[in-house]
Each structure stands twice: as C-alpha cells, then as structure tokens.
Length: 213
View 1 (tube, rainbow, N blue to C red):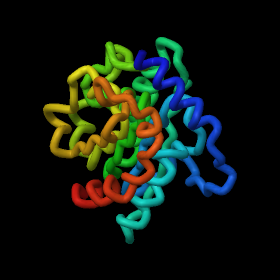
View 2 (spheres, helix red, strand yellow):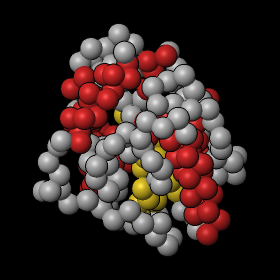
View 3 (cartoon, rainbow, N blue to C red):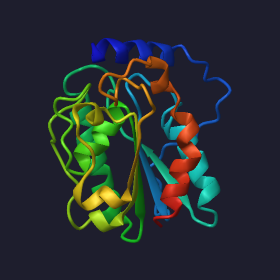
View 4 (spheres, rainbow, N blue to C red):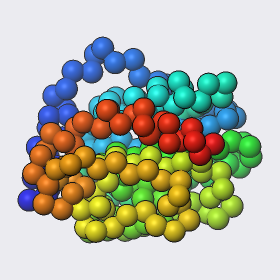
C-alpha cells in the first residue's frame, strides 16, 4: 500500500512544471568551503531535486553568506529498482571520500529527500532495509570523514514509517522533516500530497545547517 501511495505522489512530481526553476549547477567543484551533497527523490526532476535539493541549495547560499558552496547530485537511478538506493549509497560515500582527500578543509552538508533520504541514512550507517525504496547498507562514511559532515538534512524519510530514525554519531547534526499525513514517512499516513510539500521547509533546513557550521 505504501508503495502505491509513493508512486501516486511521484507521478504528480513528474507532472510538475519545472521550466521556470533556475537550478544550481551540480558539480564536484574544487575546494569550496561546503559541498552540498544531495540525493533526490524517486523520479524527482531538477538538478539537485526540484522539491528539495534545488530550493535547499538556494536557501543555504542565502544563509551561509561569505562562504563558498559547491553542489553534487548523487549519481543513482532514483527509480524503483531494488538496487537503486544502494547505488546512491555507494556513490555518495565515494564522492565524499574523494572530496575529503582532495580538499582536506572542505565540509559537507548532506541532503536527502524520500528515496534520497534512504541513500543518506545508509551512508551514515542507518540501514533503510525494509523501508519504501530502501536497501541494505553497502558503504558508510569512514570515521575520519565524520567530523567534516556539518549537517544532515532529511525530508520525507521512509525509515520513519517503520519506526526508525537517525541515532548515534550524526543525530545532533540531523534534522528530519516528516509532514503530517505523509504516507512515505508516517505510518498510517494518507495524505499523498503532503509528500510533495517539502519545499516549504527549505529555509528552516538551511537555518539549522547554518547553526551547525
């Protein structure tokens, strides 16, 4: 039932008009102060993600004035294949490890929406297996990289519907938005449109991140 509801929501996302949106460039830029690593939701359009990644990146630019930000779009299918989230998990970890090696002073802000939240969860050691479009963990950020992660911003996180959340090392640096009635992150939720409204939380997420840097 959750999967059918998720698909209905994502069909609406696919029908959204995106032509008027100016999206940030998703690049693994040289050595910025902060690299915003965003995992989009299932079938979500946009550079970093029309609903979450793009507006959050713009909000971070406004909040982190005087800081240089780069962005990276996690390279994964973001579809309903059983290995999709696992591929994103591996790519996110590989990207952050590579950047941390190349740019030792760079810090990271991790952003995940819907299936992308599963990708981030796995990458910080919280398994999304059993959640909608989830997967077992295939890679985690190493301990040497952990202090470089300034904030973790999650939206419509599917693990919440199975009673899980981010705990442990990253908990104090994580904000996890779940709209009331969102069936993807709220067990028993029945408001499919709630899953599409997280753009409204972009400023609050950016303010949280700014408070952690």
